[in-house]
Length: 600
Image (cartoon, rainbow, N blue to C red; front, side, top):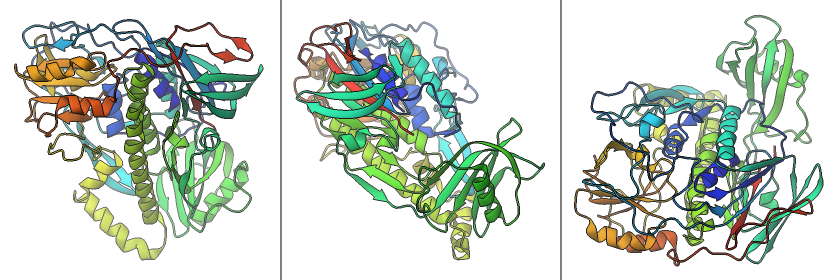
């Protein structure tokens, strides 16, 4: 989701311009589920409550957060200590181009260290669960389990650890997009709508994007381009990305309808020997309906053709084996199980995210979550590169981490579709899966669907059991009081070094060269982790642990690349050109980045 990425970049002090093909956020019903790992990451980035409707459960008994301050780490939408930084453009979800340009500010020098006995310049934010909709007490709250489905079979239990939000969040994608756009605008993002991308050309250390809008031809030159322009977007093809694809073997229709007779379509997942009809109450006298026909892929010549109410009625009637009368319909569309994953999510200065990078059959509620995890993974990395405090090698890890995740989602959805095929020969397999889920023997499926089983690649030879894993939201006690992992990470622009106990002076020395990027936070202990120091990424994953067998300075060099201690990179800015009118110049030493939005 491009607007999430724009908010991430702007929240790190990067000025952003978003260009969208749509005139407004599309209200057509799309995704309605966010899974656990995406919610956990978004809460750590500061989007809980006003953007993502999280629930934390019943507060646990314990202490309070009295005496904590919000100094140091800026909340999302604020700025990093020092001048505003960087320039990135990102686009949101439906087609267009985003361009950004800005200067690079220099945060204060020295290691910002939150101590146990005394607090330095970078005090822990009192955000945490209290700011995200819960409460920080003597112990984390929340967690628990939600019941979901797998391949149309109910009873899949998805659990989250204590301290995390409930694992399945019901939400409306359009409302999320509005929330991310609001957050992005508050952080200074400029959103320009009604522009279609028509050209893309790499020019030395930048990329020129050409578009067409209501005022004619426009162009921007930027340091990077992010294609978040959806499954049918143009950036992927213009930039020459190769793809791996799986042809369609089933076809589907969807839309909002108002049945002519009461009880004509009952809410639920309905399987017949011809396919599936999935019905969900809309709350306005109508229902959302989806059909699944497994007799073959898309019919020749229908791709892109509008769906009529008569076509949807005929498909529903054929699947259920009786005449179904539909009196009204809107937002009718067609889709299939065609799947595609780009061969790389980065080609030099052009990157892909969301449906532009990966497409899969929309079952299991994984699409929206996967796209948002792309944005959370890429946002902090691209921001550091644009600010000139990290090498571009950091962007390669985005490709490695997120492409593997996308391939896994494709495998999961293809497996679910296999279970949904209506043949009687699959009944024993469905019975087996159903009994395993009811009896708790399919816990790994819940972790996979919710992406909570994700372990990131680690350095060769690492012996740590922590590196590459997600740090759950445990209570952390600092010299200023009680906080939690969410509170420490919320809104931060770079990694955090957690030091347990009063030792760790050697680690502080090793991190000084990266003081523009890394914050140091001293805590009494890290519950559940038998390690004296952890380097935690802004998205909550552990990049380095003291028990891994390599030095912190080596880990920082591998992550951030050479020259991290140097000044801002990039040539003097020439400004952004739009429709032949030169925009206001930007500070010297800036870098520009363009991002493309989603085409539907």
